[in-house]
Image 1: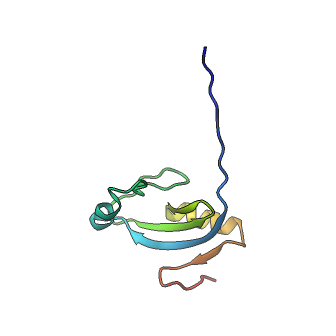
Image 2: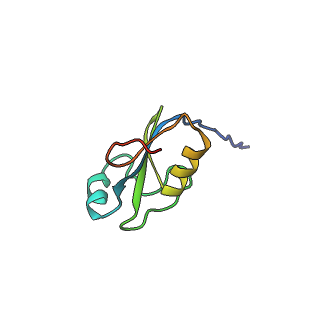
Length: 92
């Protein structure tokens, strides 16, 4: 006899940094041996390509990386999310 269980986790986004990192050899080397190597978008699972810009989401459970499409979609759905560019400036 067996059964399955599905767990849903809610992530509360506080801030999104658009295009914070570039996915390249240096990024892979630095993140490669960590618990969360950040190889893909945390929301949709899109695998990052070499040279692709990565957005950073500051959430209640730690920082997560997002593809640009997911970051823009989440930011447009909730006006309370603060959106920053790489230089730390708020986007209008």
